[in-house]
Structures are given as structure tokens and as C-alpha cells.
Amino acid sequence: MSYFVREDSIIREIWGKSDTILLIFAGAAAEFALNKAVDWLYFTGKLPADPLGRLFSTVTYARKIIFAEEAEALQSIDSIYHIHKAVEQSRESTIPDWAYRDVLFMLIYYSISSFEALERKLTRAEKEAIYTVFARVGDRMKLKDLAPDYKSWLPQRAAHLENDLLESNYTEDLFKQYKKHLGSTRYFFLIEGQKMIIPEKVRQLLGFKKVSLLHFLLPFYKMSRIISADRLIKKVLLPTEYKGEIKALDVVTSQ
Image (spheres, one colour):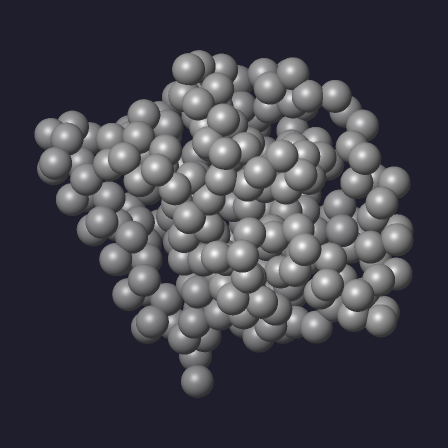
């Protein structure tokens, strides 16, 4: 059986734990709010109506691709491509290629930063493997100007952060929607999670402090995994409507 991602790949370990995926979700939620092309997501009305569901669907699609057989993964990528083309036709405009790359870049960056925040530092070879997987997704989606390797991607990512992010009315509205849908306590933990992993440019634009309360709580949370108390913590902190989906994210058992 041929899989889109090798079974021994580091990216399966990253995307096989709900802890890591939820932190990826948190980072993407912060950066999405600053993206200059976020108006495209407002066009359909789905993002402001259900920002958590919209972001969660992006993460879920990525995870399905990572664990799918080759043919199924390619079919999923093609489906994403055609969905976006249909939105372009409805708006009678074209989503800029850089906007597609931005989403891909977020998945790469937050896969790395989330795992390193929760587990350990990744090797250069592991980072290269992560980049290669998502670059294959980008190639299938017919994205242009993708870097050939991780090292070449780093300046592309830096340029994106400088050129494609902007604090706007959309930023303020999205964070209001996050708080509305999460409630004050869960929203607090979302922000603290974001502080742990967002790059400096995003931090500056959002006006976030560098220190996150979760840095101090993380050792205790890791200890809770040993007795499976982390499940109770997540049950209390996570929105009820997504608990089933989040539980299903755990393919790799937490250590």
C-alpha cells in the first residue's frame, strides 16, 4: 500500500497528536487574521460565521492528506483546488498565488514551531522532510515559485511575513469572533498558545507580549499525560461541538 507520506516520517508524528494539531490551529488562527487576502475568506461568509470551523476544516484537510493513501491524498488536494476555483468564479476574480502559498507556509511553519514548543527541537533533515511533504501539496495545487528545499524556503517565508501581513479591520473582527465562539476562558488559552509559537512579525502586529503563561504550565501538562489527565484537561478547555473531531486526531499516543 502506497501512502502520500511515509509511515516513518516525522510529519506523521507531528500530525498524529491532538496537542500538536491544536497548537498549529492556534498559530494559524493568529496569522490568518493578519493576512492581506483574508477578505477572500470573508467573501463566502463562512469565516466570520464560524471562524473555528473554517480553520479547523483547513487543518483537518491537511491531516487527512498526511495519513491518506497516495491516490486518496491526491484526490483530496484536487478537491481543495476545485473548491477554490469555484469561489474565484463566484467572485469573478482570481485568488492571488501568493495567498495560496501563504496558507501552505503557515502549515509548514506551525508544524515545526508547534512540535518544537511541545516536544523537542527538530533536526534539519526532519524540517526538510516536513517542507517536502507540503511542497508536494503545493505542486499538486499548481502553485508557482515554490522553493526547491527547506533552506531556500526560509527567505520566502521571511518575505511573506514582511509583505503579506497587515493589521486591519478584519483582524479585529476575527479576534472578536474567536472570543465570541470560544468564551473568555478558552479565548485566554488560545492567545497564550499563540504567544508560544507565532513569529516575531506576527507578534508585533498583534501587540502580543513574548512571554506566555503556558511556558510555565507546560511541564505540568506533560506530567498529566503520564496518567492520561490531559484528556480531562482538554475536555474542560475545548469547545463541546469539536470534542469528537479533536479526540479522533490522536493517532500517535502521547508519551
